[in-house]
Image (cartoon, rainbow, N blue to C red):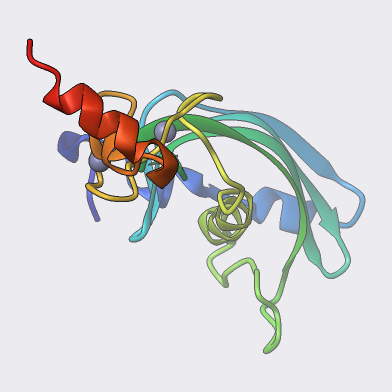
Length: 178
Ligand SMILES: [Zn+2]
Ligand SMILES: [Zn+2]
């Protein structure tokens, strides 16, 4: 596992030992805050820039109920110009972690009493991240002809696509001596 020496924290920071809650019995809960102002590798395919928010863990008969309200910052691509955009995603999570582990349970507390938030966060973030994002409201996008990022580069492709009805005028202008 990677550590912060590589520029981000491993998803170990999202593991909590809930042994105390398991033995406390149904109805007991524990509130905490997540405040991680640095990058965390949630999964091999998902790196986020920061995580903040609240986490409530409640012991219920079937296991542990996770209720969490998180703000997660991450980098994604502008859907018009493909530039990197820092965005913040709001996650509202409520999920049962089975204990003991059942065959069909997607999320569960391990036999070691470790509850790992990473798989749940990954699933929720990937759903939220599908929404389109723009680097700015008036992003000009990429030129369909040459691929230039029109926010930075002014290519002359648009001039070349001039209305045919105007092309006669264009010829006249082009041939006009300087
Ligand atoms: Zn853009
Ligand atoms: Zn162009």
